[in-house]
Length: 198
Ligand SMILES: Cc1cc2nc3c(=O)[nH]c(=O)nc-3n(C[C@H](O)[C@H](O)[C@H](O)COP(=O)(O)O)c2cc1C
Image (cartoon, rainbow, N blue to C red; front, side):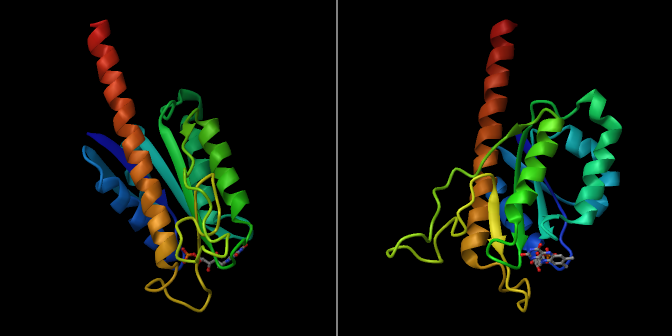
C-alpha cells in the first residue's frame, strides 16, 4: 500500500475543492491511500509526511505566489532540511487563482524548487494542453495548459460549490491518479529489489 499526503492551504475553500479532487484520484487507484492535510494541522502530523511515499502540495495563488500560510509550512520544514527525510519521495503540486493566468506558474515553480531542496522527485501533470483549437472546449482537461502541475481558475464572485469548474477538478483528480500510480510502481520496484538483494 503506498501512502500519498495532500498538504494544502485554502483561504476561501476553492483550493480545498481541488485538494479533495486530488485525494479522490489517489484513492481511486489500487493499493493507494491518501491523507488530506490542511497546513494548519501539519504540526500534529509531521510523522505522516515523513512516512509518506509521495507528497502533493496545494496552494492558492496569492499575489503571484504561494499563500502566506503555505509559505509558513514550507519554512517550517527547514527544521529537518539537513536530515533529508523526504529524499526520493515523489512530489507534485496544484494551484488555483482568480484569473486564467493569475501568475500561477510562479506558484508551481516555488513548489518545484521547494521539492528539489528536499531532494524529492517532481511529477508533472502529463496532460496535453486542452481548450486551444476550434474543436476544443473549456470543458477539456488541462484547459489552462499547465505542465508542471494542475492549474485551476475560480471566478472571484463564485463560491467553492461552483468554482473551480468541473474541468479543473478533473484535472486535479488526474494528478492524484498519476502520482498514486507512480508511487505504487516505485514501491513495487523497491520491494522487488530488496527481495533480489536478500
Ligand atoms: C490575498 C489575495 C491575493 C490574491 N492574488 C491573486 C493573484 O495574484 N492572481 C490571481 O489570479 N488571483 C489572486 N487572488 C484570487 C485567489 O487566487 C482566488 O480567489 C482563489 O480562488 C482563492 O483560493 P482559496 O479559496 O482556496 O483561498 C488573490 C486572492 C487573495 C485573497
